Each structure stands twice: as structure tokens, then as C-alpha cells.
Image: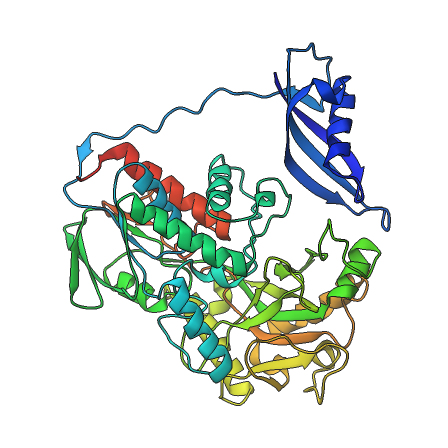
Length: 529
């Protein structure tokens, strides 16, 4: 008999045998009566710090069936299998093509390959090995490749991040995403931790292993292959061109291009594919000593091994805008993330151990299409670019990022030197006034929120905290509208996917969207052999 048991509470010192003992106690059994035991969820309760507890949900298998008394904490596992995914009746005479090998494209390709469709993936950036070399070259020598960088290449933008797997969506496909990441090299804890993360160092191997699995199943992944044109017959896909003169015939095209493929957005718009403006957020990266965040969240400055370094998530509403933290990276670094010449873009990155000195997070403010002051479908993209280029100019036009102490930002004056916090930015930095490279309707709400956040997280408002500008790529500035079949409105066989198309906001949700599109294709077509 298999049972799900919720709300098993332990201290941070208790081991897995104690958790098993508590599960048996809830069932009024001895531990010897338990045949199988597995943790399926672990979360942290730090509301009564410094007394911190861990809360578990576990799966228990007993040797014999037992009679359950009514309890909200104990339920029998429903082992009814999900209905099989059945292939459709329309025979494909060409292989499906996927553009982009970030989470959406990767998982669309994987699911198609697992069902015999042998997809072709084209990715404008390089494989992870070459990509890492080119990214490091930019960080060390300011030599930016506009095709292979933190935004473009194998694994997508999330590969140079914390590898967060948290999501707000409730979809059965989330389990598929976590299981595939685990099967391809991620640590087992991602299957049960409440806030799982892979870490950029591990994620690089994971995405490479998924690529190899797709290839083993008959798929193909082509790097340094940029989509440059789409051929239509009426409103139906007939094929694509990549790198201007290479042609692939296809009737199925999955567009998982990411939120930074601005030249591709323009090409698609020129092809009369519909785009809608979409709200997003812009701001800065903020850095504190990790020990300050640990003390505020756990009541202890030192990292508790079982918990790891503390994180946070904060927001504050001011009028019609929301100021909030985004993509928080405990024990991480701030990374140079530009994908266009003469621009500055920041992001956060952590390795699996999250053992660097600083904590960093995006501190951003919501912006609406009305802020773009332009009805053009790509106005949000141009809005992002404006502030990225201004940040480049503000810091000296040499790919240095503008940085400022939080106290000086609030006062509105350029910083003269660093205090107790040193910037972790992977490139050069220039002490500047970040007020000059963000709009006032962003900087004012940020300043007004600091005292509120400091009450929630003691030390957040420390004057020496470091701001690095600018963070503009929080989500896509556009949405490509889709029909009920997940195809682009007005087109057959064209499937906009993931974050770049405006249907996801992180690794898991993008991967889930890729799976949904793969399932839609599988349910309609038979594979080409």
C-alpha cells in the first residue's frame, strides 16, 4: 500500500531516519513495517527564527494494506496511469524543425524525439563548450559575440543563471521536466525541494546530456545556425532558411527563439506574423553580503549546511507599479549579459554550491505598454534597447557596467568609492549615477520601496549595498498570439513557444510550454520516417 504523508516537521539537525520514524508514527506503525520510503517535498519554515524547522511530504509503502483513519495529512497514492499520448493521423513527409535550444526548444525536441519524430533543431549560438569559451572571452576582454553569449547558445539564457526550477504554474508536465533534468545529471534534490535549483556549473552538463539523448533518438541539433527566413505557401509553412542560404523543407516549425532574438522578431514581423506589446519589468541588480541575508532570514550569519544560503522574495505596490525582487541568486555573482554591441545588460548567476560572498537579485519595477509611448508592436524591445545603450554610455562606452552604492542612489549622486560590499560583476565596472540610465518612473518607486524592504529583510537597505545597471530582460517584451491549436494566429504549422513568444517566465514554465506544443504536434501528425 502506498501512502502520501504531509506535514512531517523536523529540526535542521534531524536525519532521514528520524523523518522515516515520524512517518511511521503518523501511521501508528513501526519503521520495520515500512517497505519503501521517499521524500517528495521539503520546505523551510523560518517564521520563528532562530528556531527553524523543515517540513516534509513523503511517500511511504507498507508491506500490507492498513485501515486509514480520517486525516488531512495521510492519503492513499492514486496510481491511475495517465492516458497514453496517441499519435494523429496526418502523415508528415518532412521532419519538424525547432528554432532555438533553450528550455522550450529543448523539451519540445526531446518529447518529439521520444515519440519517433526525429526533429531538426537549429540554434544560432554555439554548443555549451564553445559557448562557455566565448562568454568568458567577453567577460575578460570585452570581446562580444552577438551570436553566442549569455543570451544565445546551447541551453538558452538560463544556462548562465542559477538554474532555478521554481514555478507558479500547476501542470503535470512540471514533473516530466524535473525528472528529465535529474535523469540527465541534476542532483536528486530537485525532485523534492520546495525551491530547487541546478546551478550553472551542473546545468551545462545537463543540457549537453539532453542534446545527446535527442541525437541518440534520431534528432539533429545544428549550432551556429540562425533562422533568417521562412517560406510559406499561402499561410502554411513550407520551409526555412538559416544563415541566409541553407534550406530545410518542413511543414512544422516551432519558434522557441527566446526573449532576446530581436533581429528574428523583426524578420517575423516582416512576414506578417502578429505581435502584441507585453508588459515586463526593468531595474538593476542589487548585492548584499550573503551573511546579512542569512542573518535576516535564518537568524544566523553562518550558512546552515542543510538549508544552504538564504534567499528572499519581496514586492511592494506603489500606485500602478510593483517593485519586486526577481531571479534571486544566493551566494552568486552578477554577470555581463549583453547580446548587442554597445549595450549593457545584467543578470544573476549561481553555481550549485552557492558559495560566493554576495547575494544578488534583480530589483525591478513593472512597466506597461503605455510607458513605451509608441504603438509599434516591437516598441517594448526598443524601450529595452534605449536603457541598455544609455547604461553603456553612462559607464564610459567600454562595456563597463554602471555601479552605485544604494545610499548614493537614494541621494542621487554618483558614488566615489566602495564600502563593505564589492561588486561581483564579471566584467569591468564604473562608479556612476544609475539614476541617469533608468527612467524616473522606475527609479522613484525603487527608492520609495527600500525602507519597506528593509523592514522585511533587516539590512536590505544598507547604504553600502551595490547596484549594478541595468536589468532589462526580465521577460519578453512581446507576445505572439496563438490559436487553440497553439499555432500562430493565421498560420498552419507555425508554433510560437516559450518565453520569447510570451508564454513562459522561467526554465520550468518554458520547458512545459515546449512539451505542450510537442504533444499538440504528436496528437495531430504521424512522424516522417
